[in-house]
Image (tube, rainbow, N blue to C red; front, side, top):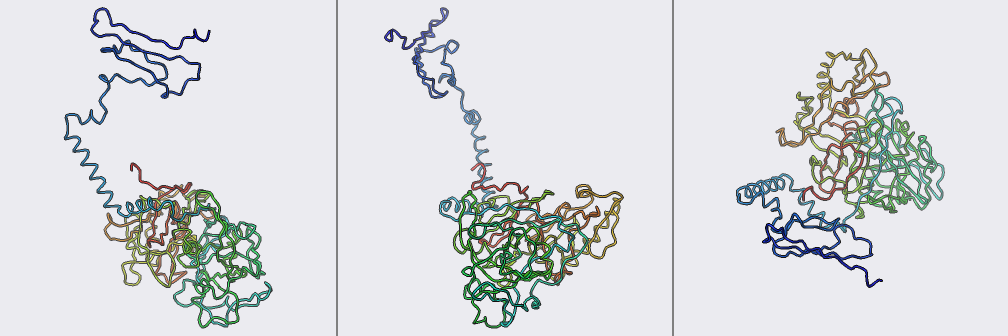
Length: 570
C-alpha cells in the first residue's frame, strides 16, 4: 500500500473561455509525512506557461505571497526618484551636509569611535559600582567640605609605629599639625540645615573578601578604611574594623608612600619601616593611619570578578566631624587625580583607562552608580570643559566665566579677575560660592517674599518659612530660578553651560522650612574658589577624563548605566 500513496499533486489552471490567449498555469505540490518547515523555508514550484492569470493563481499556505515579476511594485526608493533626479540630488545634498556638520562639530567623537572600534578587543575594561544614599544623620554639622590633603609635618612628628606586632599606638602630634596657606582646610561648615546625606559604595577587601562601605570623594586622594591596629578613635562604622597583618604594611620606600609624604618637611625617618600618613579635611577633621596593601575584589562591567592588590590607608585615629559621618560608612574612597588614588593605581597597571564617572540620582531616595574606566562614557551629548592642570593640586577643577541666577549675572570679580576656579567635589554635601556671588544671589532671592515665603532670622543659613509646613521642594521650586554656570567662552551660544535647578540647590530642614543649599565659601576657605558639591551634581552623569584632561556632564536619571559604542543610524 505504500507504493499506492500519493506523492504529489499537479494543478493545471486553464485560461478563461472568453480569453484563451492568457494561456494556462501549472502548480506542483509534493506531499510528505514530515513535519512542516517554518514559514519561509518551504519551497513551492510555480511554473509559468505563457502568461499566468493572477486571479486564479493558488499558493501554498504559510508562504509569503510574491507578486509575479511583471506585476511587482517598484521599490520605494525607485518610486521616489524615478523620473525626478532633482529629488535624489536634493536628498543626497542634505545627507552630506548633515554628515559634514556632525563631523565638524564633534570631531573628537568621530575619532574616539574609530579608535574604540580598532582597540575594542584589547583595551582595558571598566569597573561598575552601585551607589547608596546616606541620609538623616543629624544637622548640617555632620556634613563637611572634604577636599582632603596630607599635611606637612616635621620628621619628628611621624605617627605611630607598628613594630614586630601591631601593638598599641603611641600618641601622635600630627593631630595638631598646622597647615600651610595653600591647604584647603580651614573651618567646619555649620548651620541648621536638614541633611541631604552623602553617597557611598562598597568594595570587597581582604581574603576572604569582606565588604567595606566607602564615601565616594573626588576631592580626596587616599582611599582608607577604619582598622583595628588597634583603633584609638574610630566611628561606629557599618562593618567590623579591618584588621591588617604585618605583611600588609607598606614600606616607607614604596613610591606611593613617597607620593603620600611629598608634603612632609625634612628627611624621612630612617628607622621607620612603615608609611605613616595623615589626611586633614577642610572642616578640620583628620584621619591618621599607615599605608597597607591587600586584595580588592572588583567587578568588571561585564559582571566578571577580578582580584588585585591595591594600596590604601589603615585608619586608626579619626578626629572631628568626620566621626559623625562614619555611622553608615567605613571610610573614604579617594577618586582624585593623585597617583595614590584607586583609579590612578588601576590605570598605572593598564587595568583601566584613567577615567572616573558618577551619576547621583535626583530621586529623594538617592542612589546612582560610579564607574572607573571609560566604557560608560557617552560618545555624544556630553558637555566638556578643559581640566586645569596644577602640579600641586589634584582636585578636579576648571574655570567659570559667568554665573547667572535666571537671567541676572552674579559677580565673579573677587581678585580682579573675570574668571573663578570651580572644583567638582562629590565628597561635599553642599555647594559653595565666592563671597560676592553668594551675597548677590541672596539679594536676588529676596523676590520670593512676594510669594509668601518669609525669610528666617539665621546667621548661618538662608531659610524661608510659610504659613504651612513645606513637605517637598516641589511645592516651592517654581518660586525660584535656575543657576547657570558658563564655561569657556563669554559668548552664550558657543559656551559650555552647567545648569543647577532649584530642586538641586534647595532643601527642606526638619522644621519644614525651605533652605538654600549654597553657602558662603569664605567661611570655610579663602573664598576664591567655587565648590560644586553633591547637591549641584545630582541628576547628571559627571565624567572626569584624566586621559584627555577634561571634565564632562550630561543630564541623566542615573538609574541604569548605558554602555554605548556606536552612534545611532551609523
